[in-house]
Image (cartoon, rainbow, N blue to C red; front, side, top):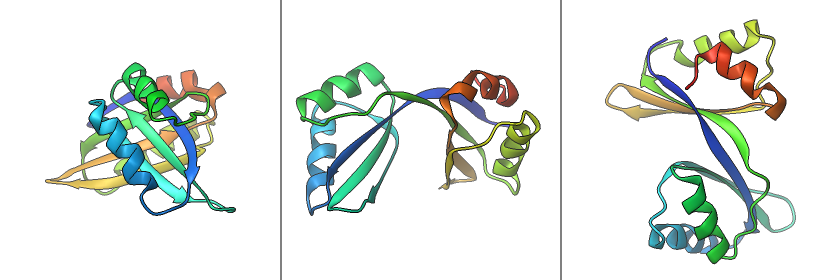
Length: 138
């Protein structure tokens, strides 16, 4: 498998599901110089939304989130993957996890253009060490 797989810090926060809230949060992170490896958000029931963050620097992110009055849930570990885009790239990773009898909690993958792709793999936290070995993660 070509590419790199590394463990990363994953944070989640619940925010109001209203116009401008994402811009407020991301603007505060930008102003604090926080760079994100990955981000996604989705609406929830009851006028709330969840934002999921994979920051480049966890400590800087946590400080900026606190300053922005963002209440973070407990830090989790995920895996960030980047490599040459080709048919079956994600299937190979999932096959390695399956062979190690590790269930995936969630996966996000996207073509990055110029023949590259990226993915984030979420697993039960008790499986992180075993998954790192199975994936050859750094």
